[in-house]
Amino acid sequence: MTYDDQNIFARILRGELPAFKVYEDDQVLAFMDVMPQAEGHTLVIPKTPAITLLDLDPEAAAYTIQVAQKVAKAMEKALDVKGIVLMQLSGAAAGQTVPHVHFHLIPTSVHELGKHAAQMGDMEKIKAIGEKIKAAL
Ligand code: AMP
Image 1: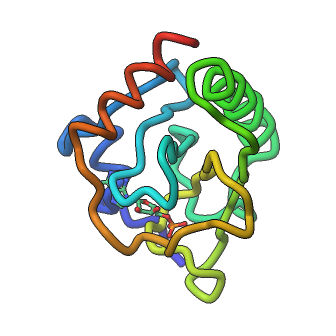
Image 2: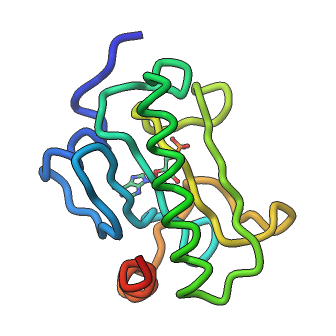
């Protein structure tokens, strides 16, 4: 499969679509999920164009996980977090809906995970939670 540079995350990376960013450097971006499965749901993406984890350069994968750990620690500091689910869906059959590799950080229990990419969240609430995570980074 060829990487589609018009996918939503590629457009967010180019600044063509808005996102509430909590962390950014030259290789990775972390931003709030607009259809959260739990309060604080954040996405961590490498900037390099790859569709699934299987396509991602191992060094980029390793660095993206390091950033995910950093964001998870900020979540723990900033929110009333009891546990964090790290989810990565590779391929439509696994439930992947956006064809740019990403890691979900979802502060919840795996038994309480809400429905995936189902309902738009309240953007004001999402931004307020994002501000707290950002401030803890
Ligand atoms: P996946 O289904 O694993 O590919 O996850 C894609 C995630 O992106 C879902 O959790 C969606 O809620 C989320 N999402 C879709 N569009 C946007 C957007 N414009 N900004 C932030 N998150 C988004």
